[in-house]
Length: 138
Image (cartoon, rainbow, N blue to C red):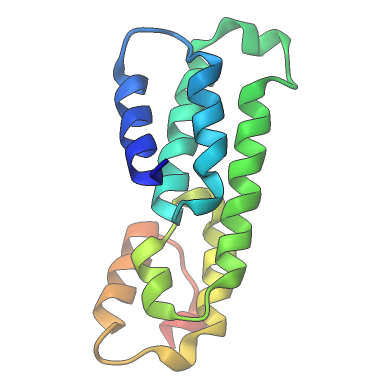
């Protein structure tokens, strides 16, 4: 199973009118989560949030399969962030708002890797996130 294929299929399934996915879709997502980059994890989190909005049973079941999947996505995203040793790799994979503060902390640890080659991409990242981080601005 290739994470990219599962990500693309999940994204397409989320656009269909069916309000909730079947167990096969959720099990495929769970099977590839550990292999995903931060962008893929973000895609899954966005899709799961959409499924939660569209599933009326969620309001009555806080320990739903969607919540467990979001918790797993969050945990995997945090683990991935803490494993980065290269600023360039982090800038390629950055995760949206869910882990924004932890992304900034990781970037601060990697400030010694900021160079003329990647400073533009770092500036774009900081602008997109609209997050003020004085340590990175210096």
